[in-house]
Image (cartoon, rainbow over all chains, first blue to last red; front, side, top):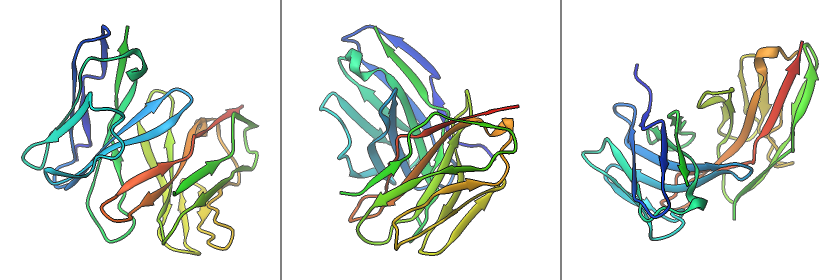
Length: 115
Length: 114
C-alpha cells in the first residue's frame, strides 16, 4: 500500500520567508511525528500528534515553528521567518499506536535550504 | 534523560567481512529498541526491532539482541555485501507520559567495497 508521502521534496527559500511542509501519513495510522535531520547532528524530534492533538510539542526549537493536523490525517509543519539554521531535511513518520514497539514509518523527507 | 550512543563511522569493510556496529543506551523503564537504515538517496527504513530484554531482532541477515544487563543493542551481520552500504541508526522509543518519540543515535556510515 501507499507509504508516507511528503511535499515538496525540495524547497529553497530566502531568509525571512515562511514555508509550509506537508505530510500525508499511511492510511489508518493515528500517530504522526515530525523530525529534523541536520548534517552532523542526527535526527531531532520536533512534535508528535495523536489524532489531531499534539500531546508532545517539546521538540519545536522556537515559536517560529508550528504544526497542525486536520481530520486525523494530513499534517502541515510551518516555519515562519526562516533562518539559515533551519536548513535541514524534515522527516515525517506515522505509526499505529500499540502498547509497545510501535514501528514508525518514514516519508522521503523535505530538504529545506534557506539562503 | 534517555539517550543512545552509537559507534562513530565511517566504517569501511570488504565484501563478505563481519560487521558489528555498537549501540548502547540509557533509559528509564522498558524502551523498545530499533535499527533503521538509510540507503543512499532513500528514506529511513526499519531494519529490525526488539521490544523486550533478550529479544533478538533479525532481518536481511542482520541481527541485534536487546541486552538489558549491558544496555546494548549491537548490530551484526556475518557477511556484508556491497548493497549493505548505507547509514545505520540505532534508536529507542521513549514512551514516558505522553511521549512516543524515538531517541536516535547519530548514525554510522558503512561502505562495503567489492
